[in-house]
Amino acid sequence: MVSLNPSSADNAHISVRELHKIYKRGSESIDVLRGLNLNIQAGEFLAFMGPSGSGKTTLLNLIGGIDVPNSGTITVDGQRIDSLSSSALTRWRSRHVGFIFQMFNLIPVLNAFENVEMPLLLTRLNKAQRRKHVETALDLVGLADRMKHYPRQLSGGQEQRVAIARALVNDPSILLCDEPTGDLDRESANEIMGLIQRLSSEQNKTVLMVTHDPVAAKCADSVLHLEKGVLVEAIAQAQG
Image (cartoon, rainbow, N blue to C red; front, side, top):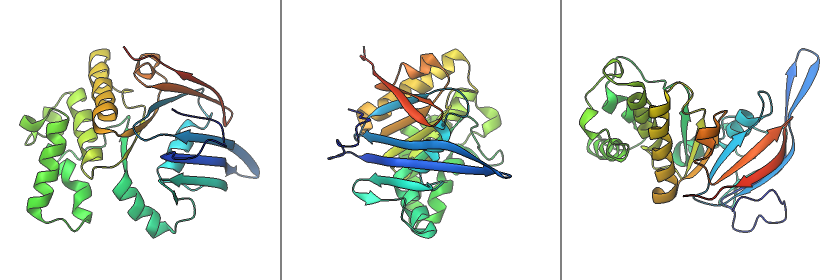
C-alpha cells in the first residue's frame, strides 16, 4: 500500500525522499515540490489530484526521469535514478517507463502498427521481434484488428488505445498517465480507465495518474492530494 511515511521504504517499488524541485522565473524562485516523501508498491494504481500548479505533473516527470530534482532521492527497485547521467537516465527510462498523455501524440502519416513500433526503432530488436512486440501490445488494448488504420480513421478512444499500446510496447513496469482521459467523452474515458485498471491488476503495472476528473480518480487504488508541492492527504479506495 502507498505510504507517505519516510521510514517505510523497505521493499517499495518506488521510494521518494525529501524531494525538492525549484523552477526559476526571472529572478523569482518557485518551489514546486517541497520535501515530498512517498513509497509506492509494485502494481499499485495511484491517482494524484490537486489544484493547477500543485506539482502533480512535475512529480510524474521526476519519477519518470524526464526531469531531475534539485535535491532529494528517487529510488526504483533499489536503483537511485536521480543520480544517473543523462544518457543512463534515457536508457533506464526507455526500459522501465511508459508515458500516456492527454494528447495522443500519434503521427498522422503512420498507421497504428507504425506508431506503436516507433519506440522499438531505437532498440536492437530485429523486424520480426518488433512485429511480435507491437502485435502483443495492440492485442492487449483490443486493437489487433485496427493495426493498419491511420489516426484519422480511429475514434478518440481508439487513438488513446494506440497511445497506450505504444507506452506498453517495451513492457515497462511503470505507467505514467497525465490526464489520460482529458480529451475524451465520458464513454470513451470510462473504457480507457477500465483498460488502465486491468493493466495494473492483471499485468502488475505500477500506474501513477494525474487527473482533475473525480470519476477517473475513483478507478485508482488510492487518491493522493497535493497542495503547493506537499502531499496533504492519501485516501485508500475500496474496489468493487
